[in-house]
Image (cartoon, rainbow, N blue to C red; front, side, top):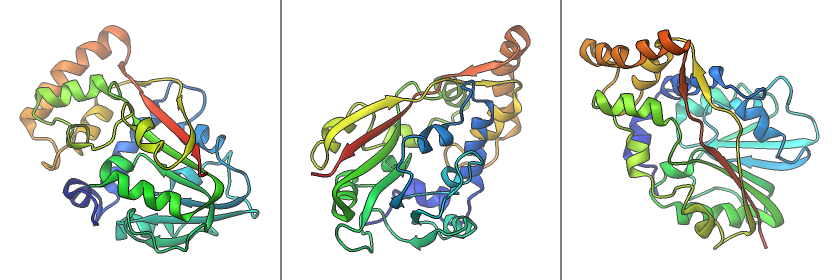
Length: 254
């Protein structure tokens, strides 16, 4: 089973699109980064498998270094992402599909899937695999975005013809996730990350929108319209507030 066509076009041969999107996190209003906040909730020892680990930022936090008593396995379908992941000391990196994991049953104490489940064509099949490779009473951690995530940014995107493909085509959402996860895991809980993003000027918005859709960098006309929407807000309020609606689900394999 393959990732969605959009995910393949965005991430197979490059990590730059993801890096540009993650740059919005520099303007987080919370005192703690998203990645550090997630790490606080993960086990501090044992074997952890992260599926769709992207550029590996979860494991590059200075306040949460990878420690010797943590056995870390990272996967991604993208060769470019796997190249990035191999820079993380001590991590075992495997290129594979989320719905066909090349690991034995009951191999890991915890499975992490950070903002990737909406990229797969069959989330149910992926979750079945997550449960299969978890040991009994092992924990799963799955991050998804709510409907309000980046609403102001995507409103600008819609105005220039850059609607979010991921948001439109996602086969699992924050609203549908509890029932879906409940098929495979017990005690499913959801916790919303604190804060928003407060961008001080228009450039981070332009950079992000240049990765939305499959159109590449913004045209001069797209940029003109986006600037016309964002710059007046920055002048009036000192920045452009973008809502953060990021939810971490957790559960236990029975």
